[in-house]
Amino acid sequence: DRIARKRDREFSEFRKRIKDADQFKVEASVFDDATYGALYKLVQDGHIDAFGGPISTGKEANVYTALSGDHEVAVKVYRINASDFTDMRGYLDGDPRFEGIGSDKKKVVTAWVRKESSNLKRARKAGVRTPEPIAVERNVLVMEYLGTDEGRAKRLSEVHIENPDTAYEVVQEYLRRLYDAGLVHGDLSEYNVVFHEGQLYIIDLGQAVTVHHPNAEEFLERDCRNVANFFARQGVETTPEELLAYVREH
Ligand code: ATP
Ligand code: MN
Image 1 (cartoon, rainbow, N blue to C red):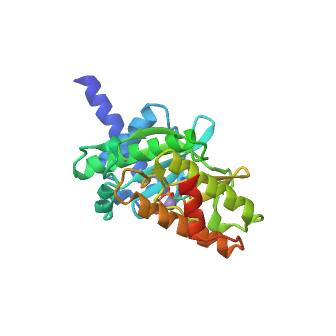
Image 2: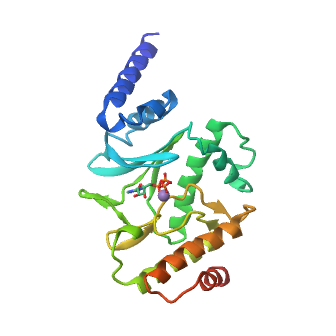
């Protein structure tokens, strides 16, 4: 009918506009129609008013800034056709929240995005600073933007750390709180911790697993190794074993 035709036309125009926008030029070929549909829905629902530039183009996802009302948000778009998708399936194992999800590519990626959003919520509840999740649509996550007008918040790996002992104490406490809340980050390192408004924030919780995951303890050990070794290089007196003991035994 007429209304449906009008809606289809509006969507076509939206897709064309996004495809033509400079910031999406490079990646346009990997955005499938369903992704344009998800972005469109987020605009329709009022979560996004205008797209900004890319913050990061990674293996599985690209992160963009966008305007929502008078403030910026971060939009993480997972590529359904990302080649590393098979790894994603494994990170859903044992997670009671995503039982029976199967191995259909689209279902896995959309479950993954919902998992990232619920991990962010759970971490925040446990007292860990992370971006606040705002909306989820298929393979797209809209979240609080960490940074200023000048640019995204800097990673630990990118800044000179004034006081490594204090920073280490904070990250150690975050690890413990996450574990207490039943989560293991699984990709924690100086690349997934950022400085925002004078505080440390943990990002990138998509792959974070619950402690029920068969490899949860192995992931925790790896996280502790990355973090302790990084801070040891900054002069902090610690070892992966000490950090692991702190996280497990408190
Ligand atoms: P990688 O594979 O590089 O770890 P990723 O695809 O898993 O990346 P993230 O780590 O979540 O995705 O994001 C990539 C980069 O985008 C981050 O290192 C960070 O600089 C930036 N970023 C992510 N989320 C936000 C946010 N909410 N606010 C500001 N910048 C962000
Ligand atoms: Mn990352």
